[in-house]
Length: 89
Image 1 (cartoon, rainbow, N blue to C red):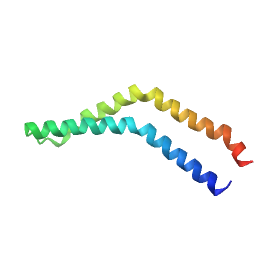
Image 2 (cartoon, helix red, strand yellow):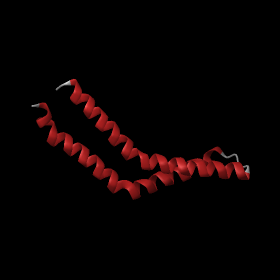
Image 3 (tube, rainbow, N blue to C red):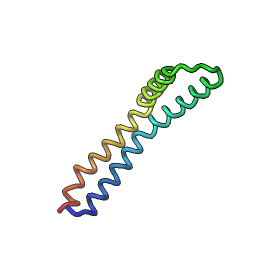
Image 4 (cartoon, rainbow, N blue to C red):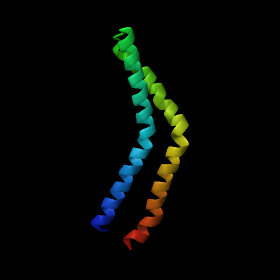
């Protein structure tokens, strides 16, 4: 196994991680920003107020984007397991 192959697999793995995490992180960030603006507007300084909406947003993102994320991961891993013998030998 050459170094180029390892670097290519690492790059592909990082791209898959970014694609799979992006919907959850984006929705969590958006909800966190909206809660922060709400807290600043109403002068509510409760530290734990932001956690529950963020958790709910991440669960909703998993429900909505779950099939797409699963398909991306299955394609990546099947590509590794099917294509790796051809890449090595």
